[in-house]
Amino acid sequence: MWESGNLTALDFQISHFPRYILTAVLSTWLAERARRHSRPAILVAVAVAGLLGATAAPRLTRALLPPDTGPNPASIGYIDRPKPRTSVSSVFLVEGWAADVDGVVEVRIYVDGDRAAVVRPSVARPDVDALFPHVARERHGFGAELDVGSKTGASVIRADVLDTRGVVTTVARARIAIDP
Ligand SMILES: [Ca+2]
Image: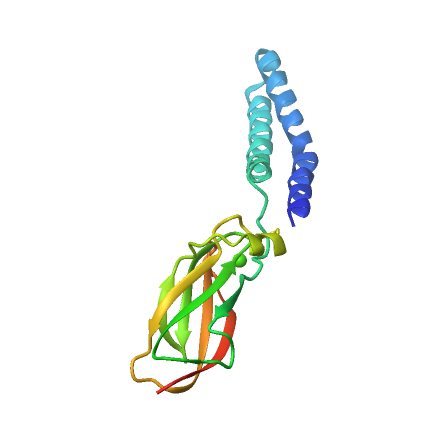
């Protein structure tokens, strides 16, 4: 991704560099020969030099800016607690981790499609860093105490991650049972 971005920037610099040389040569020529040429010839030369400079400038600007950051890899994560197919009471703790190449903004936890909590990961998870060395170096672990009130029976907990590029990804689901 980064390699291809750098190549693109390099291509711009190589393919449009001659325009700058041409513009510089024309400007120098104009400065030295202005008194010996007619006004129309100078105006044409100025117009050509200006056009070359104007068309090359945006490309140089693009070449000097950071390369396109490319596609946005999906966030990853897991719900460690409660374990799938276990029973919980109406107030229970959800714990897990979330990670993203660009960084995680928040984790949104849902119970049967209803948003139950929004948390920012705050617990260090060196195990996640070791397993996924490409993700952003930040705290991945999250935890939230949920109170589902009178809801009972089979339920699905879902964790969605909002990354720093504004994309929301469902990273984990766990089927549980809520005891009456
Ligand atoms: Ca992402």
